Length: 235
Image 1 (tube, one colour):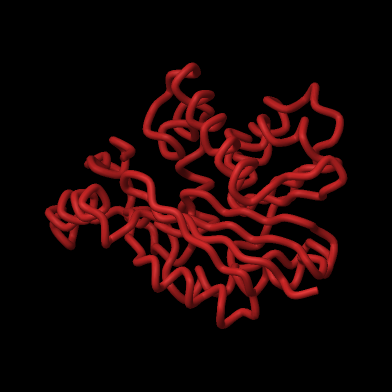
Image 2 (tube, rainbow, N blue to C red):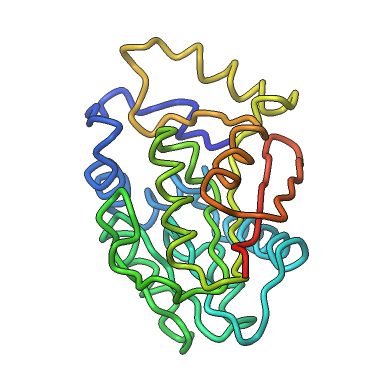
């Protein structure tokens, strides 16, 4: 778990949690801080390895086809996208922070099949309906409230073509490792909790979002502190 999430800077302003654009634009004012708040480390080797592992999971469990248009919700600086873009027709990275989009564009400058889009903060409004084959959202749900998690699941359903897939994850409240995250974070005094503090999910919660939004063939996987859930938009 990110050290930045565990130990917020004492001098950091407490912006409203719901103002995702302000929060994440300020947290990503430099590339080093962006990487720190995404992955908990500024070490490039560790950062790259984590992105590759998440990309490998998506390719293995959810499938990425060479003809797919793949969209990431909360792409950050391209930690995962840099490993997925070579395996699809088009990779679209969406992020609420203009700084994240800028850094992602710089880091992926040599990759031809990449588009980067700044989003409003609560939806995927700039993305056309039925334009993607696969959507994923990794280590983002912990930073947003439950209603907004579901909103993004609904938005993913909208932008996916029939037969398209969605995959999301979050800290798993029902695992020992996920409970350890919960215990660590709950010890931060309520007046000191930063707006980006991680909030866990249960597998049932994430499955319910996908079911209510209309997805079928819903599957789950639990590894260490995370639960992953994915499903398919009916054809």
